[in-house]
Image 1 (cartoon, rainbow, N blue to C red):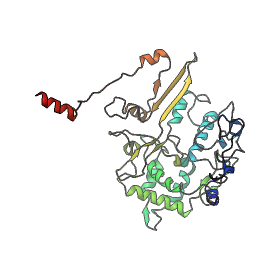
Image 2: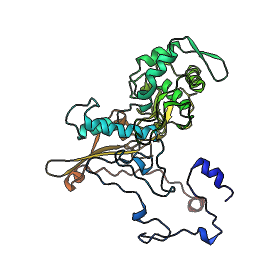
Image 3: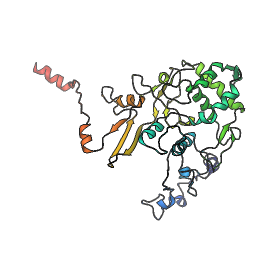
Image 4: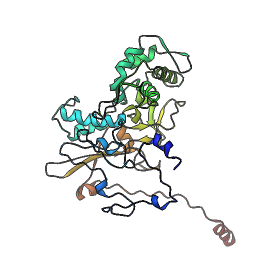
Length: 369
């Protein structure tokens, strides 16, 4: 296809097929359960007794100790940088199992540690780069934006120096970092002047790293981020609870979490990214969350949330209840046994409005009079 050279740049190895030619007809693997698809023998699988994960990137680094390779490019990419969110996901597991995450307890997951990690709201990008950024930029009063205009960064630096590095509700200043990293993430990880330590396929969790803070585009991104906040109704030291709220409820419900491009495992996304109303209106991200363990007698114990709640009807008692619980990180116990389900059964409510008579009925009533 004439488009193949273009697509080879966007997605190396991904084929372009001409649907008008019989030789481009989908093939069927001998072990495929249906026509025109891959069978299990040509799909990646991994079974281990320590851990595996799926954090939205391809199968390649399901466990970085046993990389999966040799599969068709249409299934996923191999030997490429993982997103910061995926790297954060793997880091969380590794640090829990080696006990370096500061959570204490045994070096494995129990329900409490799992729930703590799931809603942690820390950022891989902050861990990778904040110290270098502040050391490089915060010794001066201003930096140049992309158009050469100086931007005062003094107060922004003070806030970021005090920031706790998360997007939890009482965290202050992380929105400055978010807007900065929005600019940084526009640079491809493969760009030779973005990271000083490039991606190494043998170490997908820890590479690339060492942000090139001398890169003019990264300097501009910091200045532009500060200016964006300065030009908005949002204070530089605003708390997340005051500026990040549910975008689907009438009353403001604070929502913790960050964006995938920042390296947040706990996702809260505002689209479009418009700060003119003084807040991030969260309308995408974490949705159904469930953590599961087993009681000593083998009974499953599940707790979680439907983060946007269970009803779209503002008159319903279930319109915002789970969102409010999620905001406070108050996990909801899900019933499992028949007895628990019966005891927890939600009441069914019906709401009847006044019915309008159609025109024919109104005419009949007039005739009766």
